Structure formats: C-alpha cells, structure tokens
Length: 308
Ligand SMILES: Nc1ncnc2c1ncn2[C@@H]1O[C@H](COP(=O)(O)OP(=O)(O)O)[C@@H](O)[C@H]1O
Ligand SMILES: [Mg+2]
Image (cartoon, rainbow, N blue to C red):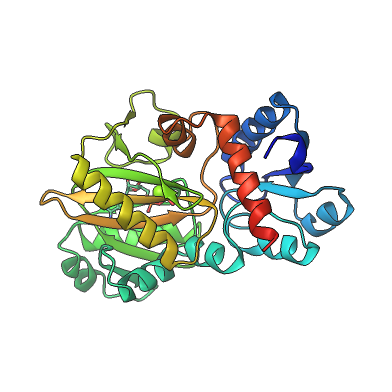
C-alpha cells in the first residue's frame, strides 16, 4: 500500500504515562517518516481528554506511538474501537494483558512457556522467606511500568523490602522475579514474522533507563552471538509468547538466556519504541525494511486487519 492510499493518518504520541518523553520521540520519528513519503499525517499529543481529542479529529487510521499506561494498555485501543478506526498493534485484550507483567507470566506459565519464577509483593510480605525462595538474587519491578522505571536488583530481605517500597511509587502492583544471569536478547515481531534477534550488552547491572536512552556504551549486536539454530529457536519461542497473549500487528519480546543456554521470557511490549535508535526499527533494517517502510507496513497491516 502506498502512503497516499492509506488515508489520513493520526500519529498518537505523548500521553500521560511515565514514558511520555520516549513516546514524544517515537511519535516525532513516525510523523517525520510519514511526511517524508508524502503521507497525509497529523500528530496528536494525547492528553487526559483523549476522547474529545479523537472525536473532534478527522482521520482514517491511527498509528499508536504511545508507550505505557493509557496508550499501551488497551484503553486508547478501546476508544479507537468505539470510533471504528483502524489502529496499529494489538487490540484491547492483548494490550491490557501485556501491560501487566504479572498476568503475562500467568499466561506463559499456563502455556508451558519459560519465564522466571516471580512473586507478587505486599506491605506485609515475608521478605526473608521470599528472597530465599528466589535464591537471594532477584529483580523487583512495578508490574505495569516500562523503560526499566522503578526497578532494582536485590540480594537480601532488606533490599527486597526497600525496593518494593521504591517500586510502589510507580505502581501498586509490584513483583519480585528471579534474576537470570546471562545474556539478554529482544525479538521484534512484525506482521506475524519474527525479525533478526538483537543481543543487548550493557556495562550497567542491567538494561536500565540510562542504558536504554542515555548511555553511549550500550551495544546492540545484530546479528546476535546466537548460533543459527538457537536464533531460530528463540524466534519461534517469541512468536509463541506473542500469539498466546493474543497480540497482533507488531511488538517485541524481551528474553534472557541463562548460563546453561535456556531462554527465559521477561515481557511483551505491544507498543515498543519507534525512535530511529529503537530496537524494532533496528531489527527491521537488518531485515531490509527501512524506517518509513516499517511504518507503512504496520499501517497497511492495521488497515487490512480492520477490514476483516
Ligand atoms: N529476571 C531478570 N533477570 C535479569 N535481568 C532482568 C530480569 N528482569 C528484567 N531484567 C533486566 O531489566 C530490564 C527491564 O526489564 P523488563 O522486564 O524488560 O521491563 P521493562 O522493559 O518494561 O521496563 C531488562 O531489559 C533486563 O536487562
Ligand atoms: Mg523490557
């Protein structure tokens, strides 16, 4: 489909989540790419009154460049369903599910897919019992946040409790997950296909906010160091993890590999970063799809899906 035949495109960006600054960058990149190929495009900084913003806007299809709650969690998707407008990425259910790392884990476990053991934390958790059950090596995460915000690695009961309190500043739902020592990968999925795997190397303890957006020593290995067989295995695992959540269109699955070679699913992203330095565009490029071709492919898939 050409840029012109897609119709009037609204790029939804910004939003009110903690990932707003990243989303503004994603939205700008998508908007510029669409402009450069001559598309009819308008950029919308989604505010708290999103419903009236979208109702008043004249558009044919939405590119969702929002990240985090409000934009990646099924709520904006629900508004677009009611407006009967096609939009990129997953629908209401999978967006809501993937936003919640705890319930994502429940589904993956039920499907027999590998994901590290984790516990939900509460004010009166048995801190020493839990940290022992996690082999004194865990990561505490807000369940519905992104960009590594609110996360800390922990080794003892005191750190577990303090990190729980820290994570609570971002979300009332917090989990402690067994730490996986080893290599980190991410698998981009576009239109039913797993793209070449990217391996992430950081000098930080983990791929934290700074390593993601600020540091200039974060390495992205593409091709990854995996053997061809391992790479294909990981791509299949990522596709299964994506499909079992009911995710659609595009997304990214984050994975660790332990020292014995086993893969462990961390999370699914249903509206990943789209800056020109982001991971999905990087994988797409290695697959022969430049940034604007990727954006057009996502819009085309969304439009075709809506027609069915
Ligand atoms: N169980 C784990 N073991 C080791 N590192 C982890 C684990 N969970 C998360 N990490 C590190 O933290 C980063 C962010 O975690 P992730 O679950 O992907 O959340 P998000 O990207 O939504 O903030 C990962 O990219 C990885 O570097
Ligand atoms: Mg992640």
